[in-house]
Image 1 (tube, rainbow, N blue to C red):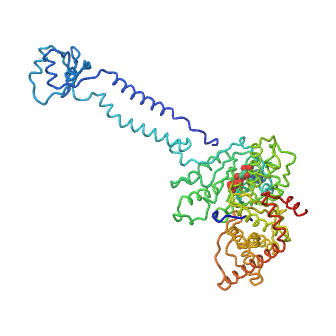
Image 2 (cartoon, helix red, strand yellow):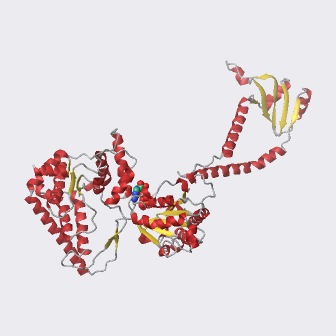
Length: 627
Ligand code: ATP
């Protein structure tokens, strides 16, 4: 129960690419050439542009030493450095030039040749046609540019493809672990005993394939692991390869799919080819539902990329011959969406269901993850396992890590129970949000939580009260936590009716103390409605509907999500169902309000203590009432 504010509603085969040394060197050469050219231009003496008349005047003065003519351009050198007339006029000393150039006007100047000869000027003419080498250079420039461009794009591409080069689209992205590199063994996988038992046969086959071959035994080619997220599917697959001592290829379904059609299928081909070469080997395809959905349901009709990829997987699995000891393990948490062709005999015909860990398995997972960590003597792993109903293996691994981080932050030498308590609250209830509440808000939240808590203390056959708090966490402003002593598999009508009372207790307490309701009970009301509807529609717990099944939503076995079903009952029964839901809710509310009214003194004592302490655990609550 939570009081909620209204507003809150790189692996081995991916090693870094080899440096494109030639490309780097080419870039440097080009840069150096450009630099050298600019430098030599800067260093060469400046050339003065002369008017043609000035040039002729200097010619007459016998101040021209040599000239070179190329088309209409005449360039040359002065006998004595020349200072332009406009600079001579200025007070500052003008710059003198040794070189010049001028442009020949488009008229025949007979005087020019005579003057050149009479002044005995060294004279040279240049052909306007480019030389052979210049021609060759000009022809090569586009090719050089093309090669540089191609090299550059390939270089950029290689980087973006993790060093796999331009034409490696079709290469599989599967992570490859050689047998020596797999550290995981079955002892690292806690619980999941049935699954391990089933996988022992696969391990035996992969370790001694010839024994099975000789007897002509057919071993399953594919095994499908189904279970909620974080329950250890990937870990179990890797540990299986570790136990068998065979190479492990791990890939996620979505990694096959690229934006180009046909890439997925060729990646599948590539992965299976590599596995065959290293046979015996184990392939693990995680999230197979992303490619293995029922065909013909995706966008793009029956021929989209996903289906081609799936077809290729099926073809590869059919194509294993008896010499190839390759087993494919696949994992999903949406088995309901898989194409039936995947589940046919000869493909993924064995199924392993991995459930969330129960008490014993939780204890084992906690032990596995605390194995190499210094634990204080006061740590009670059994107690932590009992108070973490519903958490997955990944959650528990995270909890242990959070406890270690907390201990490190507090500079402790070992992890103690307080660190685990902190981590448990963080993982199970969410981190403290740091929300600052006003005094009236705190008071209302305290009474609301105590309303839930008093009912959890007084009503029979309910999950025991564990903790109450008015420190905002996650999206909740206050929390009442009940913890079942053991994992429950079945709920009695009495338990559920009392649970409805507890859910509505917060709202009743607010009405009783403040004579006014607030929006903080929104989540409680939603949950109470969902529960009452399931009681009446699915579990036959209403007298009027009796055994009529009126289920309209199905809870997904692994994801906990609701999925709509088609309505299969009349309007008459729909109305009856609404009435029955309302009746269950009304009865629960009445009982909750009456119980709280009769125990108002307890409610007030608990609320005032909660306002003082902010968080009360079960021992503190018991101590308060035993006084
Ligand atoms: P998903 O469906 O999200 O891919 P998964 O079922 O493959 O999840 P894993 O990736 O195998 O889950 O588990 C994540 C981590 O949780 C593991 O690396 C491990 O540390 C821990 N873990 C989960 N289950 C177990 C277990 N049974 N024993 C020990 N550790 C576990």
